[in-house]
Length: 472
Image 1 (cartoon, rainbow, N blue to C red):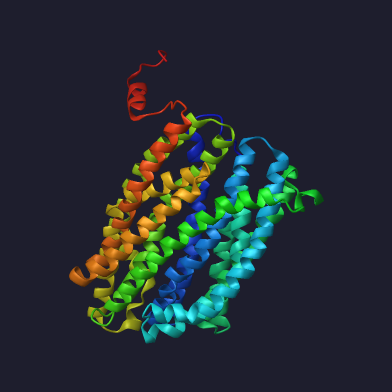
Image 2 (cartoon, helix red, strand yellow):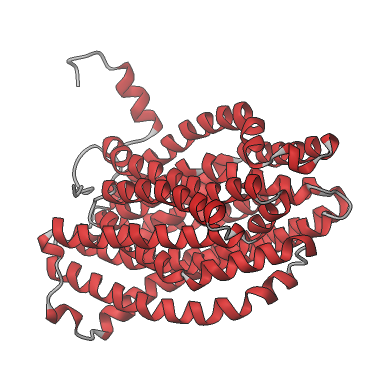
């Protein structure tokens, strides 16, 4: 079902559009968690930590995929908002062409340099082999990630956020089943976890593509749509490349963070394992903000194409209302389930030492609490950054990525030196706040230029609530 975001109540539209994305993102995180949990319980805690050590590197490479495909879909959403069906088809064709080129380039770069990156991050020797072979498996299958992301983002660009959800649910279930088959039955250990992820993503992406062209005849590509159009290619690259760079710049900061953390492991045994577990839980807790960001990009893109700038402002306000509601729910989730969820990742019997096990759980819970207390600043990053990307200002948001990089890197290395693990816990919140200052300023200046009258504000909500029925 396609959803036109240029008409109707923004509260209902953004909730209706973002909720399936949220559920889908949670399932995506669940099958990422499945790799870590199953490896931790069937192989060893070191193997789990090794798989966890790869997250910042996979973010660096796969972030390029997420950014480019998101950028391409922003162009598609703008054509959709302008009711330009030929433009939508040509946008989809160019997106697929560029994705094929992107897959070849990223695979050629990521596979040979995976080991060098792990060494540069001071990955502990007892984790290195686990990390390397898992990472290489994921990178050989990078085409599967590209396929799913471009298909899912294209569907979302035309207002269909449900189909990617169904595909992700299927993919998550399949991934867990394949994890057990590959790791337990075929004895592929941690490599099997990577293989299961690649296969499940490929099948999910293929289903999305088939459904997209079968369910929406207007999206079916014609021979003429595949012709080389340099203006269209240039437009897609201008939006997609800055978004990709923004993801990768953020990922570089995460690599610095992981490097600082790896340096603590000798003096604080188990800290990497605790961080690995908490980062997976943190990823679940912040998916509401991620989904609101995705919805903001599509909402802004469609309304920008329709030249309804006041509705863009309304979308930002509505998304921020949902952000604070999400923060309250996240606090309950993290404080209430942080420690029990950590225990899912770590089999105490494989560690042997009860004191070490308790330390790992403590490290995990501490990191998680520091993150959730500052989630509103993360929500601002997602909503304002994605809104700016939706109206074609993705190049500007790259600078916000640089401010995040600076905040995360300086904090990770300087504060870790003086306050240890607490410095690692504070590196993300400080990075978010640094990006917020820039994003809020740019958004205010940009929307002042575009104009448009917004209908929603905190004052208007309070006024409507006090208005008696029948007097609207």
